[in-house]
Length: 425
Image: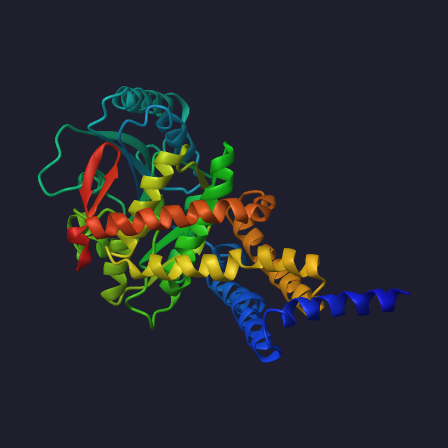
């Protein structure tokens, strides 16, 4: 009876397709779907595993600091970050690295950021004088630099970090964004790897903290799109001098190398200054690395959709240097290789097309596992990979908006209109 039911189902499916296509046409359509659906995702899964392997050295290796670790200057730019800066500074001061100084830069803040920094500096100085190990006083210092004006031709963050670097005494510069929460061993782990492997610059991805539904739904997907679209793992391939990415939220650079390439003055008008600085170093033949580091740091990026839309348009359009083709290539991938599975899976169930059902199930399973891992790797719940019919159309909207911004040559960010024109070189 079971086999008779299967036969009837297949006969109905055959009649359905035969009424619309001849057998040859159906086979062409089927194998085309197999190529752009299940097969494409199997290839993608392999490439994703290879790329991931290149970016996991911070977890795999056990690197040790030298007996006398070099002084590290931790630079933290802050503009209107009164709600985050205290937590950030306190976490930074908890680093177990034996010798560092902290330089916090108040970049023209209109809120209480400057006052909080001054209070933290006073309290840290008092605690050092009151009871800390005298041998450590002076190598775990906290200073605040206040900036009142922005020179023409500079973007704010670039200028803030440039000013902070002028006060730095360390052999290494460790750039940390004010909304980042560092694990106590973050600097030690990153510095140990950089020193042991003789790297000139190391940046890491972080855990993406999410609270609202739209953040949980979109931010891991957008970050994974950026990493995949611009081949982040190729940053670690010395044979690819033109391919490099960085995450300015956590970025360690040798001070002499930073000065050698011109520092932030060399990228003073670039809206993705971290990426451009890493590209500049790699093109100069220096050893750059970009690793997965969500176990060492976390950050909350964009808390509402408008901020997300403009923020990721800045990242996509800026990283592509105003070129639209990376976004144009990503959009058909999402339509053809992602969204195609749902109507085919539903149709094959309704019409009982067994071989279409098998192909679409393989497509769905491999795709869902791959996408779920992207949520896991960002520190989020992989259950949201089941909501791709909702998240992918939003992703397409953001990519389309990024294309419009790239064509117009301007980005709206934090109340200012930033130009992409300078980033096209």
